[in-house]
Image 1 (cartoon, each protein chain N blue to C red):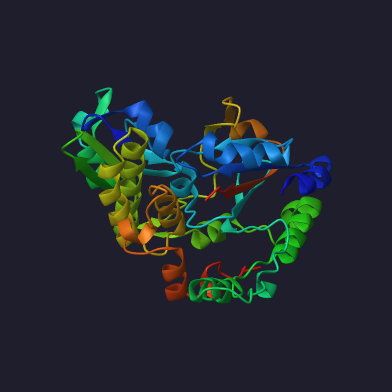
Image 2: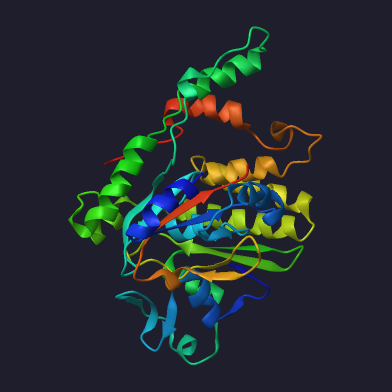
Length: 228
Length: 114
């Protein structure tokens, strides 16, 4: 998905680094990476360390870093190509659940053209680009971190550690606690839901599931509008 | 960060959290938070001291005798615009250091298979 853009912008001084936030590691993320045949670094973050480091709460999220190692745009929705979610068809034989899912999905906001346009401007003009933010603004725009968010991160990390160590049942309470402490963190929810046994629904183990939580938040709020 | 003991190695703290334990205290960028005297001399520091001084969550799993220290709280996810140290394996298992790209602009993209 990002390789085409990398081919265009690498000669102009940009490198793209993709990071897969996947507790299941290369087993989960590897097939998609190999299919993309990336020439750019394609990293695996089994412990979701970048969630904590950059304040990432959903994917895809992008962070811009300049030549000196300074962040010039903190985490925000990052799309390489437009997704016509608003044109998703509803099959004639769709179930009520499918209709609900498509109806919410049609509201998802993706602003690839705007985002990539801004990225090209920054690559061309560097710090003269008005899309490159000053350090104070970068910090101000990064996610707030009250104690509940720190507690959520600790609980999510403990849950992941126990899951990877083979104690999946013990992990559930920690994932659930992380969801309660930071309900707007979709990476915590979506990751935990994915780790539920295939024979179970996410909401048999956790309070929510993707559709229920999406409807509560509203599809239009799933990806915040770019502040550019 | 997962801990197998409530005492944590200082270099590991820096690698995982970006907080360097120096004579003047726990430091990240220009900010230094003083620590109690005993924390300045040993190779290890009590996680509970860091938790209290830096506003980090600290949880304990008694069954598995594990602790987990969350990130500092009270501000924003980024305490400065300096990109944090990040070393992760690529999909072929080779470690990659983000700092190796200094001199180039970088777009980091977080995605997931789920």
